[in-house]
Length: 298
Length: 204
Image: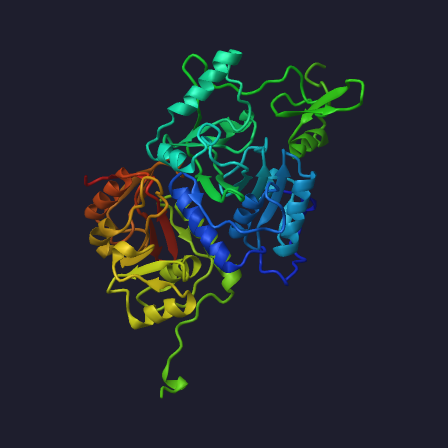
């Protein structure tokens, strides 16, 4: 793998008034033990003693705690928010770990070995040895169907997931198709139904048999779960209404990609809009390689 | 009165407790996420003989005063007990069935593993982890492993493994999502065997 050095911001500049990666060692060990249980029981939500972090709940405190517990000094970290490396949440979390851990950072997907993400999986395929850390707001896929934790826990224990199929069926009855487009429920390794976090269902197929380790952290709800590498992840569906991903009738307006997830961007107050790749690294790399708008039509 | 000179200090632990634990944890995490695949530890630590540097690295990385450890009588030498107490503060469990971690020679696993806690249907995470000390990662009875973490089946034959051990571990896996998660430690490496792994052994 040849990654130009310029693509990686080198390690250094750690503020050593903090412990390495901010958390104290006791907390890291507690999270590390939870992570091992999560890997051993794929898709099961392991309770953990989530700490308050120097950012509000909803800004990725679960993902940040998981990243802090796994980070080592020679890691190269990438942080994305809705696919973008340059949005507020991604920039502030990257700066947080540059300051507290002094690790190298990058925007290149394949140059990173730890990627923390909010709501997207990079378009560039992940490889063995990489770890993808998801920020999760509501880890319990059954929560909006059954508010009681005691009941959802029992449902997971009995693998009683009929209610989830009723919900998907009601989508079909109302809309004629499964209208769930994000946080689309999956079954991991044939056992636990899991919330993939609010990623678009476009990304669900990338979770299955992924060579990278996938870790999920929910800070407010204090749950950690995981998908080991090369694990089957199946999106729930019906024989006559099979799972499908979003499609767009136009390519990315910047790089012409037809295989990536597109965001709609409003460009003026007269209804102008454009559709562009949500994965900024993927889009920029395609443009650097000479791809441009509408090239497939040319 | 006991003079300080009479108490011999325990063997040294990690030279940098923070960064060494971080490096060791990533190896341990990778080992459990890739079952039956020996992973070399990045740091060697000085350790009492009965525990060995690999068992010591696992203990220093994962154990503390919030966890209970059960030590097999062959492991529970005074040097090991003092080493773990000094470096980790881990609480000793008097019986294996009350432990979060159980440390044993691989030869004792057949009798010890069935006595460990396997979690409950509501909380399968409340299960013990077993640390099986071995001389190395080959030379024992082989088993073919498949399941989460493995792109293709792998053969795993840690020294000291027997067909009886694989039979106990198959029963452990059959209880999924309950069950014990195992780490094999020795010969400069650690290997993981989570309860989710399917086990076929040649000798039945």
